Amino acid sequence: MKNLFFATICIWAFTASAAWAQSCVGTANLAVTIVPPPSIPTITVSGDNLVSSSATGNQWLLNGTPIAGATGQSYNPTQAGNYSVEVNIDGCTATSSALFSTAATSLQLNNSVSLHPNPSTIGTTICSIATTRNETATVLLFDPTGKLLYQTAWSLQAGSNDIVLPIQQLSKGMYYLQLRGENWYNVQKLVKQ
Image 1 (cartoon, rainbow, N blue to C red):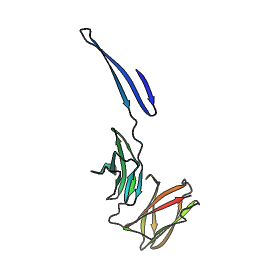
Image 2: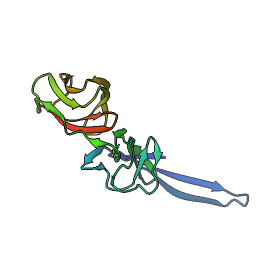
Image 3: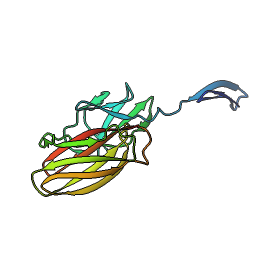
Image 4: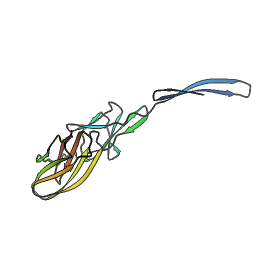
């Protein structure tokens, strides 16, 4: 048996022999190709859609469960939850990190949210939120691949709230800040330079 390696594909060549009672001997050559799994897909957001980095082989998952019929490269979430995509190519699978989506069909967009400075060249950014009542907001920070980097809850008072976001440990790049109140949501792009 000999092993031949080409890039990341491994090919083994075998020779098999068999003997029968009447002194017959047969030989056959067999090549087995082992293909590596597909690259781990990433999810990006385009408008209201989630988009897989893989053009084919997609199966969208909600909270780890396959969504019936959701096999395209993009998916429009219909409910809040953790969305991921599994890519299957030639029987080999790879699954993305989960991306939380509010899919806020029953929520109102809160336009009273702003980030400053944005882009930020310093170690902090101020998130200003105006609300009409006291409430708690969930805050999530994602990288462009949908990986959750930070999650917390903020107690908001009726009126204007300024909250300092410590971003000094973030690498330069673009991030998504997702805020969700009791009956509202908002997603902001945050850029660190």
